[in-house]
Length: 190
Ligand code: AMP
Image 1 (cartoon, rainbow, N blue to C red):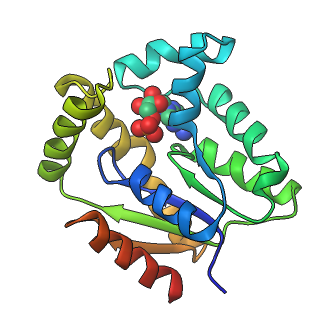
Image 2 (tube, helix red, strand yellow; image 1 turned 90 degrees about the horizontal axis):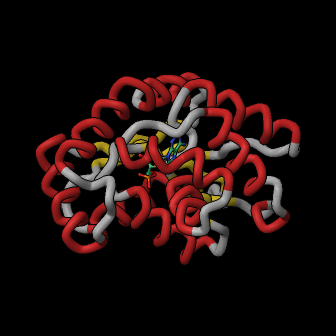
């Protein structure tokens, strides 16, 4: 049976959001994107949004306590019982431990972690293009560089964390959306 409790890991611009949407359409489970939830909170000026905005604009991570609260609330809703595609959470070791604890409390566990690999020069190119298409305020060259450094320093160590739990599948993120999607399907079938 295809795994349905999934996590996508990868640097900004690797295609996590796009591939999460493809998976969601295929599996019929919700996408859980802390980035999307935080952007919505900023737009509607909730307390979470007000806490998060300055960090997001600078390309830094929003504090663990804030993000963990958002993720816990979302994952505790009943529509995630049949599965979920986590995209952009966890991003730190503390978040990964909080996720493990939450899932354990809910009597669930992650089934597969897909780590999407893309070279830095391709990432920069994709992010510059995204900034033109989507107008995201955190896609400026300076914040892009900072987000890539934050990924390397704080999030990339999670690759080993999940490898040790035998959950990791590494996916080549080069090429078209369809090519990467096919590799992800192969990784899920393996
Ligand atoms: P994303 O859309 O996943 O690239 O997230 C955009 C921005 O939201 C990031 O650069 C962070 O400022 C913030 N963010 C999203 N998810 C997290 C997370 N799990 N931990 C901390 N900050 C996050």
